[in-house]
Image (cartoon, rainbow, N blue to C red; front, side, top):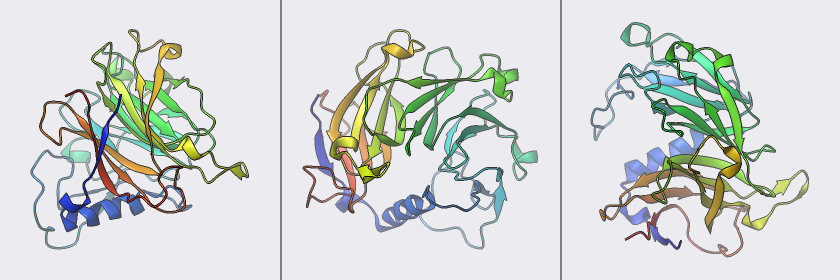
Length: 292
């Protein structure tokens, strides 16, 4: 499966680049301080309204959803309980937990949200909602870096009244052979048109691992192929698409409007350059789906 690489930087509006930069730095997992998840009541980021061209006037007020762990590393949205409101999943990297937050509605939106620890895993860098087994209930997938270097599925209870019961969740790893893959970001996408939804994931190059030199091909963009029975974890298969350096963000999007989803990435420069990328420009890039 060959994909074409296209640089998008000339197409990005300066404000968009600024926001990408802010998101990259505010999502830094190396901070040792207590982190908070914040929402604004000046601009409803939980709605599907159009994004304005200018910043709203006045100060943005922040409301803490949860500050009980360490290293909150990004937020992803989905309606896990079917009430029409967007809920949140967040990995706490230094805390070693993946949580789900249930949107309480307008009356409780500014207070700490009801939450559940969907799973305890090491070094979670990313998490997202997806109905992985097609049973009509959203589950959570987490991507881990550090020394854990694995992907996990947190199977949600089918009884929605038990969503806030951590004992009702089941965490299983997606097994694969890897010397060192520090997973940074992932999302669900149908790749092969077979079985259930697949998982696209990307990692960063590890400069050192337990004091040893990093492995040059550890920074990869690839996908995990779902078997017919997605709960059969041993039957998942990993496929490498290409080498990279340090993937920060991934997005599925039909960039060329040809009817299939491409992949948009943000890739960092710096000393974490995989073999074959020395001297090459990185940044905001889209990879063209070869299906058409």
